[in-house]
Amino acid sequence: MTVDRRTLLAAGAGLALAPHAASAQQGPQVHRIPVGELEAIVVHDGSALRPDATQGFVMNATPAQVSAAMQAAGMQGPSLDNPFNVTVVKTPRGLIMLDVGRGIPASRMRANMQAAGLDPAQVIMIAHTHFHGDHIGGLADANGQALFPNVPVLVPEREWAFWNDAGEESRGPEARRPAFANVRAKFAPYQGRVQQFRPGAEIAPGIMAIASEGHSPGHVSFLLGSGNAQLLVIGDAVNNPAFFMTNPEWIPVFDMDPPKAIETRRQLLDRAVADRLAVIGYHFPMPATGRVERAGNGYRLVPANA
Ligand SMILES: [Zn+2]
Image (cartoon, rainbow, N blue to C red; front, top):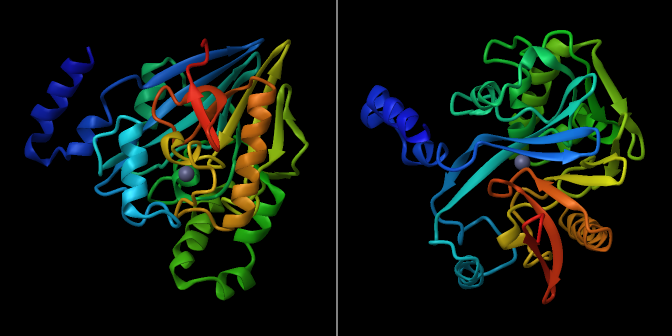
């Protein structure tokens, strides 16, 4: 069925079909994990091709070190197809989205939700890990219209404060200005529906926010718990496991406060090991989940049932 769909798309798009657009449609698009009365559903939002991950992706490793890590993980370097995976939580009351995907033309979010029988009209709440564009883009369309009318949007208090602080915007690097503007644009149609929370808050029954700052100033992760089952939606506190579990001190170019991000990464991964937590990562390759084991000076992701 996937092949049929790809063939159709390829026929329609002709030569305009980019290589990474094609690869984004290979493999699983949705992965379901029962968590007691809840269900965590990983929905693939496509991927973006980084032609050479040995350059400019890891800030404090040499191209040779990065290349070696990729080889050890069985990757055909140097290119990296960097995935985006949103967690949708099915609750007895409706769907809760933990981030909403990229919201760009290449986004697979709506199509994959539909294919999985997840109706956007059933979404009762959105909660954000942080405000980088690949996580909030799907809030509004290119005309600034809300894509989730009437849905409350829950945001970490510190993240909200940072991105709405004109002082932070003017003091920060020039290159970061578009991200501030994007936050304003994406949240504009949600005025009156944004609710701030602090780490430690239970944002909905069985969904607890956990502080995991460093990747961004107010980044949070979400711990799902129901009955004896638990699952950690880690967000961007850990990017691609082949790089940043194996080497938790490596700094992805997107981490805004590297020392804090490293401390957070170790803390969360130690907790995942100790509590045998299943973990979902926004930028893990599909199915984007597993348990965490110690390996060498770092960690590795293993299939959840191992
Ligand atoms: Zn991200």
